[in-house]
Length: 165
Image (cartoon, rainbow, N blue to C red; front, side, top):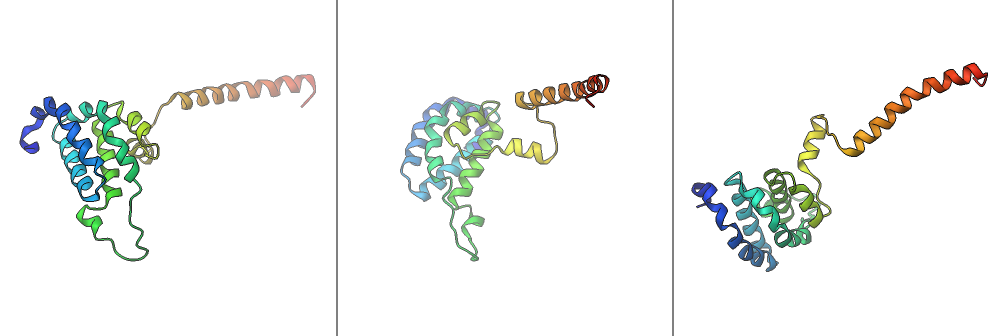
C-alpha cells in the first residue's frame, strides 16, 4: 500500500503514530526492527511524509535513543544479521538518517534533541565533499580573523614608527 499510496498516506499519519509508538514500546527487538522497516518505507513513499513526521518525533524517537547502541560485539566473527537487516543499531541509524534527509530543515534539530548521540549524515556528507557550510560561528570567526589580518600589519607599522620594532 505504501508503494502505490504515495501522497494519499499523508492524511493518515496522525492515526499511525499511536500504533507505531505502541510497537516500539514493546521493546522486543523483532517488533522494533519490523516497525523501523515500516517507518523507512513510510518516509520514502512520498516527499511530504518525512516533514509530516517531524512533529511526532517526541513520540517515536525515545525508544530509538535507548536501542541506538544495540550492536553485537562478536569480535572477529561474522555478523549475518547485518546483511539480513536485523541488526537493531544499524536499522535505527538508517531510520534516523532517512528522517533527517526527508524531514526538512527542522528534522536534524529535533532528532538531535531526542537522540543526543546522533550525528548529522547531511552535514557529514557536505564536509566530506568539501562543500561550504556557513554557520554563525564560522562567519563570526572568519570576520574576527579578517579583522586580525587587517589590523596586525598596521600595528607593526605603528610599532616600527615608534621604535618598538
